Length: 66
Image (cartoon, rainbow, N blue to C red; front, side):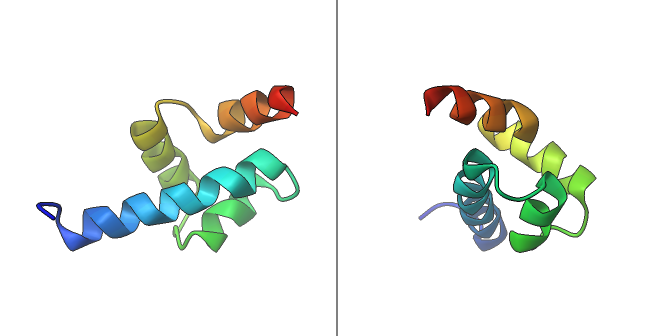
């Protein structure tokens, strides 16, 4: 409530990307496509804005936690 539908959809897509990145099984470009981003650069920019870190950093942090 109180959030435009497009912003909420973007948030859901980026939340879906976090487990894909943390598993490390697929390249970042494929994770971007799986989350319906048109390009890896757009995905990286949106992910950084939402999560506060780049997708590569998210992958490294998740790798240390295992």
